[in-house]
Image 1 (cartoon, helix red, strand yellow):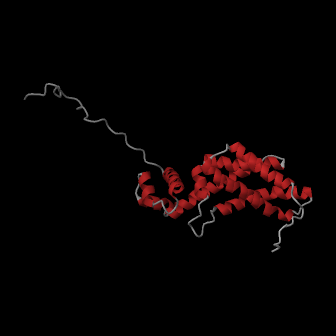
Image 2 (cartoon, rainbow, N blue to C red):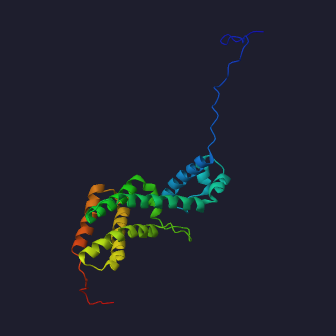
Image 3 (cartoon, rainbow, N blue to C red):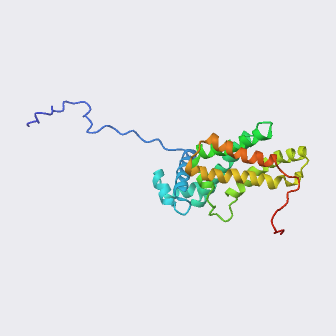
Length: 227
């Protein structure tokens, strides 16, 4: 029987493989799969929001079927809630951990830098947090996060108010005002990224510190309105 001139006849042994063997893909553990789905969900929620993200797309990007997503999180709502909770804890931990200075002005600088650091390092997370939560029973809202951070600042302001002879009962009001100012500026900076982070922090502290420095013990309104 004639053979192909360019291919020597098989003379025994193991026949050559027509294609290299593919390595078997290692199956993810349940924990690894959960983390993968969280990472994918986090990215999609940041880009498109809760309503614009589907379980189908999350599953497709993870290379799994929809039931796998439901198995881990019960649905899109469950996945979203875990993502938001993680980001809230991350930001709160960054702010709380940054407050190490002794002087009040330095503490303001540290709080401002902590928020701007988070925005810079975890942009997707911040974009998710500043959206209104679509879950009616969720406490993971940006407003609730700001309130948690303000509670940390409240204690600092309370001590400073006592030292200056001010009413310490007003420290929650000023804490909300200061943290809200930094947070809203952070939302603006998220999109423009100008000026540089250190300069933004310096201007925030400049306004906050010199505003506090010139505080009146009993502020009054100068217009006609009284209520």
